Length: 213
Image (cartoon, rainbow, N blue to C red; front, top):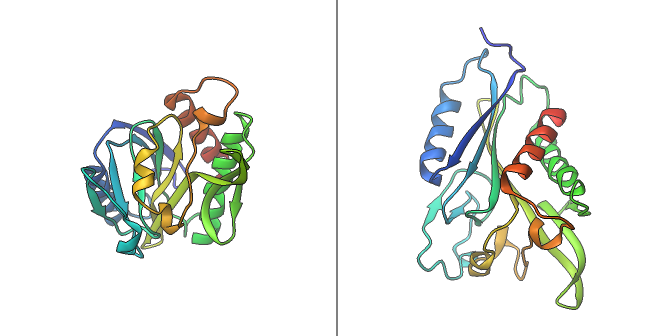
């Protein structure tokens, strides 16, 4: 029997979205009350994923990047090389918090990780995710740096968070990210005062997730 509140970490490496999506659903369907919670760290090849509430008008010009329909919440987003993705497979009923609390925890984890790189970030009550404020292209405003989307089945969550580290941001211009019209994206490598690697950021995120969950 597993210790119920164990949090196992799996590094899946570079793996296509559809395979991991299928594995998440299978893992969650097969859970028992004794199944340990897991974090799956992964980097995806280029892919757009459309959430359950996704509206086709937010997918502007996908071009040669595949679009995958997903059962997570939210609208369309992009995953690609250089982005830290962590899937959070947690029995939230056993941990005695709800979906809103989990969303807040994941936002807090990304904000704390960004602070380690000298980046001040915030969450917004009207749009899940993490944002940075400042002057971009000479004008004040906000840009999004971290996204999240979740699904809860039988009291357990899957899907999770993505944090932009050092990636090609151009594909985000082909969509309205998370349904936010005119929202521009940014990443740690553009804002940090020191060099960053994907592996290092993943380790920071995992450490914060262990503390927060």
